[in-house]
Length: 149
Image (cartoon, helix red, strand yellow):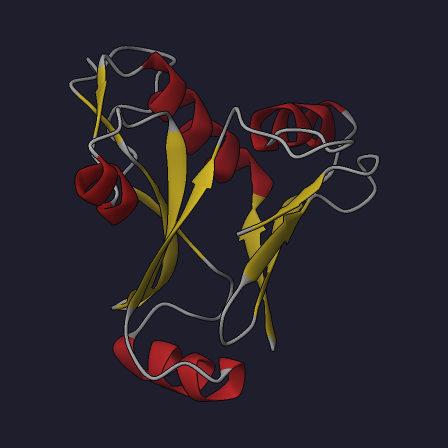
């Protein structure tokens, strides 16, 4: 397992971008099951490790995140960083893990609520724990918000 830390302020902007988008890039699951894509953040491992919004067709204006494309995990900005992380996490390939913003399991907070609560409480990072076959997000000290993919 590896633990990835992302600056919360940038992640919140990505989340707001996804929520404001008029359309969303489909995940592999959406394509295979013919489901409508929902607002989400994608964890990408390949050319570094970063989060990105799946939102498309969002206009750029003052106060929006239209020009913000990705938020890198601290210390994971290059392909070499990802390859080391992949070995440490027990993964062999590049990844794209989808974290829906508005879905929550029973008794859980959804990701968007946890991000905004964390930002309001002064939390500075989103943490993602990555294993070979799953990932879990958490916003430290922002209540019990966490989710697993």
